Image 1 (tube, rainbow, N blue to C red):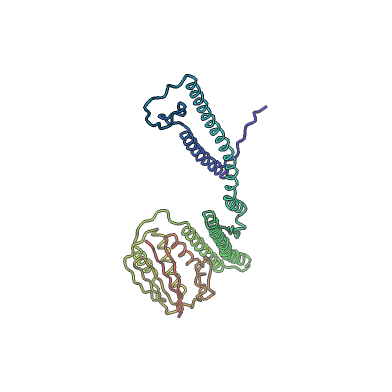
Image 2 (tube, rainbow, N blue to C red):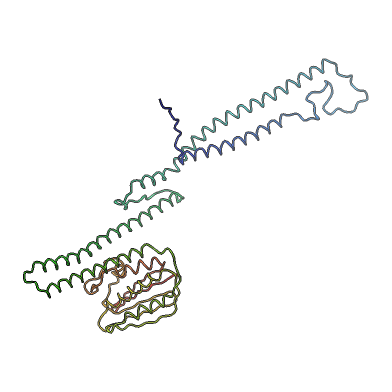
Length: 385
C-alpha cells in the first residue's frame, strides 16, 4: 500500500491575503496586549520606599512627637507580614488571570479576523475571478466579448478596462488578418486561373502554331510575373508589420534622390525638393516606402499631370494630380487590396499604401493622407527621429 500524501491547500491569492491579514492582526494584537499587561503590572506594583501597612496608631505622615510610641509587638509584625504576602499573592493572581484571559481573547479575535479576512479578500477578488473566467472562455472566435466591469475606479477596474482594450486590439488584428488572407487568396487565384485557362486553350487548339504557342507562353509568363510581384509585396508588407529590431541612422533625402532619379518618365512632370534629412531605422524598408509612394503617385495620375516630392526636417511629402478621391474613402486606401474603382486600379496590386503604412509604423512614423480638391492625393510621412 502506498503512502497517502497530505495535500496542502492551494496557495491562492485569497489564502495569502487572509494569512497576511491574520498575521498582521496577531502582531498588532500581541503588541497591544503586551503593552497593556506591563502597564497594569506597573500600576499594581508597590513603590520601593513605601510600605503597604504601618504599625497601628502611626499616620502616613506623622507629626513630630515629643515621646516615641512603643515598638510594635511580635503579633502585630506577623499580621502585617501576612497581609503583605496575601496582597502580593493576589496581585500575582490578578496578573496571571489577565495574561490568560488576554491570550484567550486574542485567540478568539484572531479566528474572527481570519474569517473576516477570508470574506473581505473574496469580495475584493470577485472582479478578478470575473476577469479570469472571461479570459478562459474568450477565444479567436468570440473576441467581441467584453468584461465591462462596474464599480469604483480602482486598480481592478483599471485592469478590466485594459483587458477590454486588449481584446479590442486583438479583434481588430484578427479581423484584419482574416480579411488580408481572404483578399490575398483571391488575388493569387486570379493569375493562377488565367494561367490555367491560357494553357488549356493552347493545348485544345488543334491548329496551334509556333507563334500562337509562343504568345500563349508569353501570357503565362506575364501572369507568373504578376504573381511574383504580388508575393514580393506581401512579404514586404509582413516584414513591415514585423517591426525593426536594429535601427541605423541614414539620410532619407539621399534615398529620395536615388529613387526619383530612377523613376523619371516623360508622361508625368516629376518635381523634387530635397534637403538633408537624418532619420533612424531600416534603409532598405525606407527605400521601399519611397518607391511605393512615388510609383503610386505616377501610376494613379492623369495625362500631363505632375508629382511633387519634398523631403526635409524628418517629413516626406508626395503630392500628385489625378482622379478625385472622396474624403470618406481616403483612410480605406491604407487597407490591403483596396482600390477606388477602375479609375485608380490600373495595373496595381492594391498593396502600395498598405506597405507604406506598415513600414511607417515600423519606423514610429505617422502617415497622413489628404485628398486634393482638384484631384489627386497628398501623402505626408512624419518621422520622429
